[in-house]
Length: 174
Image (tube, rainbow, N blue to C red; front, side, top):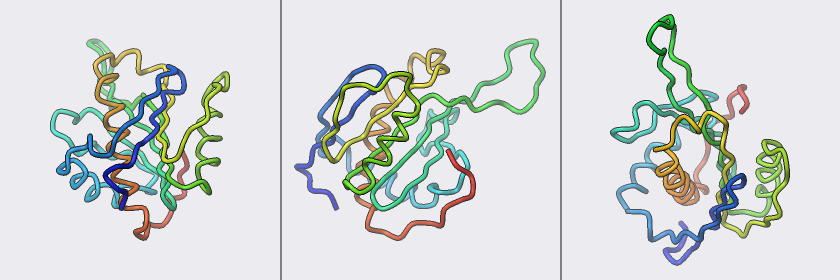
């Protein structure tokens, strides 16, 4: 388990924002919730609703391996008035990755870089969490407030779980 004095280097790759996040900032009940929820929701290849009241219109898909977590948060787009009532769409809002081990950090960093038109001049410090925003996020301005918090909380919870066995990988990729 990560020590309470650990600091997470949290980087918004397209915004240029960078923040040092103390593990102690995350409430214990939030870590407990995410540590219980994450193991059954990684490597399934599917989106899963977030485990928080009030965020029913959002879901996340995760891949994970040996301390590394890669996720995409999506928002539900309901049909507008006059549009057909087909199944609602999940629009990708943010893709994020978290690493606490040098062995997988380079792979995750490379995957995030593939999502950007231009590579930023930034070098993360372990442990880190970084994100790339997708165009649909512009339609969800309020989510800009809670998504970084969710990313940090998920990263810390996953680092706590990283020594646990993982579910088998699903065939679906991000």
